[in-house]
Amino acid sequence: MAEKIYWDKDIETMEHDKMVALQSERLVKQVRHVWDNVPYYRRLMEEKGVTPDDIKGVEDLHKLPFISKADLRENYPDGMLAVPKSECVRIQSTSGTTGKRVVAFYTQNDVDMWENCVARAITAAGGTKDDVLQVAYGYGLFTGGAGIHGGSHKVGCLTLPMSSGNTERQIQFMQDLGTTILCCTPSYAAYIGETVKEMGISPDELKLKAGIFGAEPWTEEMRQEIEKSLGLKAYDIYGLTETSGPGVAFECEEQTGMHINEDNFIAEIIDPDTGEVLPEGSKGELVFTSITKEAFPLLRYRTRDICILTRGKCSCGRTLVKMCKPMGRSDDMLIIKGVNVFPSQIETVLLKDFNATPNYQIVVDRVGNVDTFEIKVELSDEMFGDTIKSVSELEKKLSADIVQILGIRAKISLVEPKSIPRSEGKAVRVIDKRKLV
Amino acid sequence: MTIKQISIFVENKPGRLSDVTAALKNGGINIRAITTADSSDFGILRLIVDDTDKAIECLKTADYLVKVTNVIAVTADDKPGGMASIMKTLYKANISVEYMYSAFLNPSEVTACLILRVDSNENAIEALTDAGYKLLSADELAKF
Image (cartoon, rainbow over all chains, first blue to last red; front, side, top):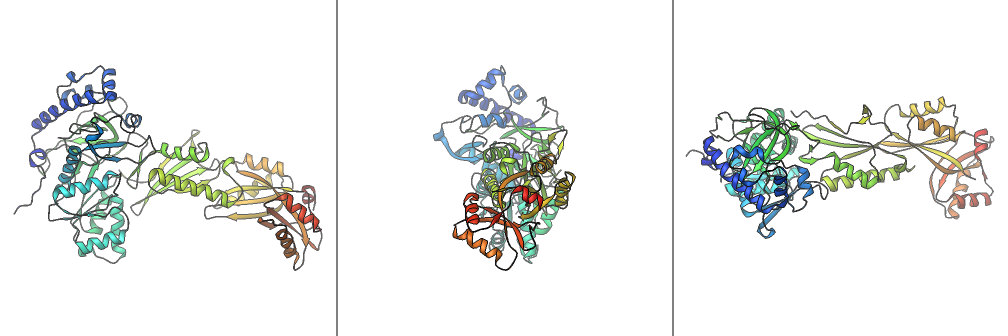
């Protein structure tokens, strides 16, 4: 029997014209929904002089105002909610300090939509109900664990809700339960691959056939290493909490970009400086409009990911537009160990611990496929206390506060005054030594 | 009678001690006592010098992080038990020593000089003076 290669064949292989018609119908409805239910949206639209009557289809999308992370922060926690809370069944959230977090709400339909998007990704990676799928993304507020878990259930895979960490146990379950699909961040996949080797296990002894890896940037070289060390085919997956989670876009066997689930998300590429919509094939900032979400619908959400969209014919048969791997950011956000990190979050911690913002620098690197994260802080008079103990305590406190806010550990290095280089008098806040593009 | 000690924050990397001491040399500063305390990433260099104010000025100009602490300089007999009797005196007076180190100077051939950082300078000075120990002043430290 031929293997099922699509989760939702009609949508995934729909002719472009029909897809545009479907998107238009959904967009018109969605614009009316937010206008009626989210006062903040209505105000933004009024300021731009646009009403739902002006939006007759996808061709009118450019008339709508943009939404950015700042808007979401301003409306923390539930100012953007478009349905009564009693209709919601779940939240997920980004990392960040209170007020800087984004809380995304989901109705049952939203969860189903999201999980169906993930189911398409799993199916595109060759997954069926006969597969054993190991979820080694973190569970909790992070969308990685929950999203893949739900999609895996939809497909009917035997789902192993491992969460991340405890690598030897991950490998033991892979062996004992015959895992065929591994889902986690690419850096964790690389780490599992290295551990497998250290334990003296050959990839042939594992039943893995596919891996679905996302939530952080990774390179083709990394893909090849992971494929070799674990004996599987590695697929990329893209998503963000603001739109749902992983599954906004997914890779097929061609491995030349990720198909966007266009029936749920309309993608645009804009010039990050002017906001002007750029023609297909241009490099610019990726913008998403979620046209089916009920609880937390976003119109023209600026992802800050720099990207290119292409609509060529794909050998997999899917007609869904493809996005390349994000090529960078149009803001200062870093993705470290799969976690979104803004320098401003680190400033918040420094301000709290020192009552001032000392000169600091974030140094990120990737050693053996694992991100390293160091924060150098210049000590000031007020911070220096004559004994090793007092300085070490400061270091420990800072380290604990960073973990609490970001959820990941940073190496804290207290350094001498004026030892962090400044260019043109301005401190360089971030040094990212990773070569990811 | 206390004296001023300078503490300098120094990262653990090659050349730092050379740089600090060069800064002092350029200011014509003479070091009377010195010690280092270290962790894996940084160290604290503690110094007693002949001209504290001038030394601080030199170090701050060179962007060093400097802290001044009041410590005690006490002379003891340079013979077995000399140290033990000072420690016993402090212990009896319920004084805790945070750290201590010896100085480069010897007021005479039969005495040694010890720099003490304690939890209470006032109590330590009283206890040591009552026990007959001689404390050195900043001027004496500069002179010997």
